[in-house]
Image (tube, rainbow, N blue to C red):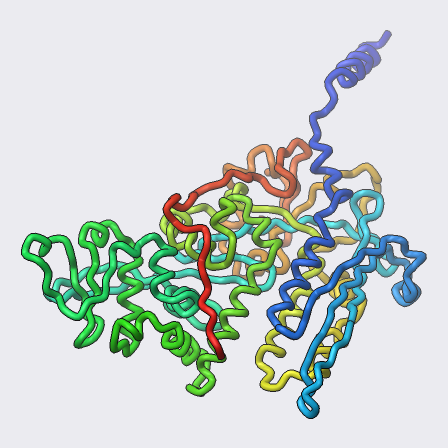
Length: 499
């Protein structure tokens, strides 16, 4: 028998006993898909920030023979999602409560032959998008990526002077959202009050408002005093102050920019809501109402999917957007040194970017309603009437994340199953703005991303995963990091403010 035949038999026998250790769970992950219904529900529930809208349910129809208007999108394999809402509104003329049920029909692509989309007569690769799993650092600031829009927590150098004219240098923290960079504690205090905010950050025992700087002789070295006004001072525990990295500086920065006259005023949520509202409107009569809308908007931006995707954050630290802000502020230094290229800080997604046009549309309509002075049933119904069933499909076929299937071998898993990209909605910046280092390799890529495959036209953006990759679902790492101290309360009590 020829040596080649012997070698072939030997190799065949060895192969049968030692198959390739391909990660089939990852390769065929598209068959399971992300939970489309859960994502849709998360998007729809966010609309309830408008008090007149109530989300009532979501259904997915996968049997294409039941689609009444499938002929309008020829040669496509689709899923039909139907979202239902109940609307209520007071009639301006009669005072009667009007009610109406509406639904949104939305076509979504169906996975065909494990890996592909069939849209308008063409077959496409269903490419995974790799993005940050939650927080990321950018130029010394910490970004929080949600499905709707990002938050940015940043710092600014700030000096404070005590009543003895001693100067201290530190950092004050800001929240950049809605095109405004605002002292982050103002959001907490206007939402829950000063007292509750101090308790929430576990620092209540270190601060006291007083009318004098006088203390007992044996306590002179225990406190530092800062002037809030001519008749009001903030007494700070000196031992805590020497360890504190940001809270005192941020609080003093906030107090110094407000005309706070008394301790009672410092405890009044109405006062702080006015301070927040006037940042966003020049109409002082509308400032408190504007603050209420700002708080509602901030709460709605944190969707359920974002919470679930922040697998590296302990459950108690993501109960609300304010819990996540507290977590970011507590571990700001550690987070600002994390490597954005490290795969442990990344995750993959598919259905989220497919639904992105729908998310953006609802977000635009929501803000339009929130800024409407007089709500009518016509305004409410227009939120849904402008959403066409083929909204996502129409934009998906022009999306840079899709690729035509042009392979000649139907078992080519490297193109169909293992392609990922960092481009697209909420992804890395475009080719002209992308930092060179993001186009390179990172040690965490070893064993996960093929190092010899790169896009000739846009290197570093598109990659091919190795078939041996080990993941935890669509995450590279689910290790919980940076737990806040146990003395931090789990609940932040909100102050009910009449607007």
